[in-house]
Length: 221
Image (cartoon, rainbow, N blue to C red; front, side):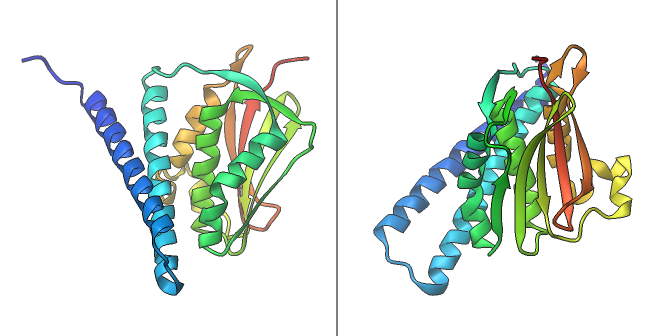
């Protein structure tokens, strides 16, 4: 009997689970449109919907993680206007923030552009925001800027910030962060220009909490 590739089986299972979550989201949306929910019932429906969205995004992240780790992902880079890219991210994630009574916004130079894989960076930003939703007190902010030859996308919150023990490598990819930071690190490193690879950095936030910065190398002009 031919030995089975367990990683491929798991990836297939995740893909199927993601499809099922998508079906549940569609059914829930239909239920919302055909029923009149009020008060606590409406709040519960919104919370269930946002939890399903988060789960769906996590499945997407795991599939990308599998492909990145197995060199099975082909990078598709393009040039994007950061104002439009970040506006799209906030629009998609705003309901999750509202469900937790948190403010979510973005800032960047309106003329700033960046070269990167949109699918990977969308997954990285959403993963970082979902993580920040767990710790933020009142606000989460996404911002982008050019720093030397890198585009820097930062996700910041006003929570308690990274704890000193979290700077250790063994905790960097585990504990409360799960696979999120590892996924962000692989996604950033997949962006390479002239032997210069992207990377991530954990820092203190300008909002007083934690900041995850994703550094992506940019082509010389």
